[in-house]
Image 1 (cartoon, rainbow, N blue to C red):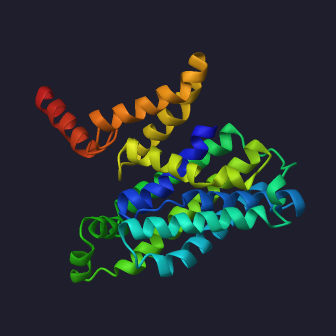
Image 2 (cartoon, rainbow, N blue to C red):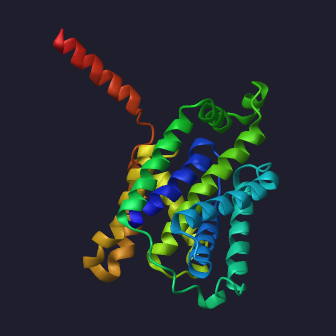
Image 3 (cartoon, one colour):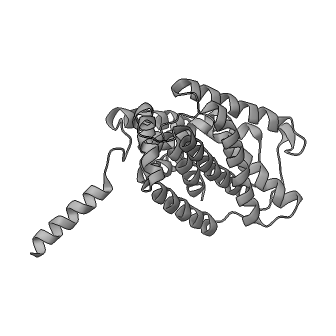
Length: 277
C-alpha cells in the first residue's frame, strides 16, 4: 500500500521535474499539507474520507500555485533552493501550530486507507498523467523542458503552463499525503523534511525523468528495496546506497529513461503483421 501512496506523489513530481523540467526540492511540503488537512478534517470535523482526501489535494494545489507564481520565475538551482526553503518553512510552521499537534504530532487519525482505494487512485493518477502528457498541455511542458526561450518564441505561455504543472503535481502530492496520514494514523512534521523530498526525487530520477512507467518502477523498487535488505541488518542502508550509486553509473538515464514504449509496441505490431503475411 505504501508503494501505491508514493507512486501518486512521484507521478506529481515527475510532471513538474520530469516533464516540465522544473527542479524542486520541497515536494514533501505539499505531501504534509495534504496529510494534515485530510487528517484534521476526518479526525476533528468528521468529514468523509474521500471528501477530506480531495480537499487535502486542493489545499496542497492552492499552496503550490501561490508558491509557483513568484518562484517559477527562477530556474535551475535557484528554483530548487527556493522550494527547499518553502519546505522548511512548512515543516517549522507545522511544528509550532496547535491544530497540527505541534512537535508531539497528530495522533488518533482514523485508519481509512486500504489497498483497494489506494490502487483505484493510483490507476486514476496514471491515466490522468498519461492523458496530460499526450495532450497539447503535455507537448507544451516538453517544449519548456527542452528550451524555454524557444517555447516562448513559438507562442507558448511558459509561466502559465509551469504554474498549471506545479498545481497539478502538488494536488497529487496532497492526495498522496492524505492516504499516508490515514495509513499511519499518526503524523509528525519531521517526517516531511528534506529527506522525504529527496526520497521522492530519487524515485523519479532513478526511474527515468519524464517516464511514467519509469516513475512507477523506480518507486516500487526503491520503496521495497530496504525491506528486502532487512536480513543484512546494520548493513542494510549501506547496501541500499551502493545500489543507488550503481544504478546511476550503469543507467544514468534511469531504469526506463529513454525507452519509447510506443515505438517498441509499434515494432512488435509490424513484426507480427509481417509474420502473419
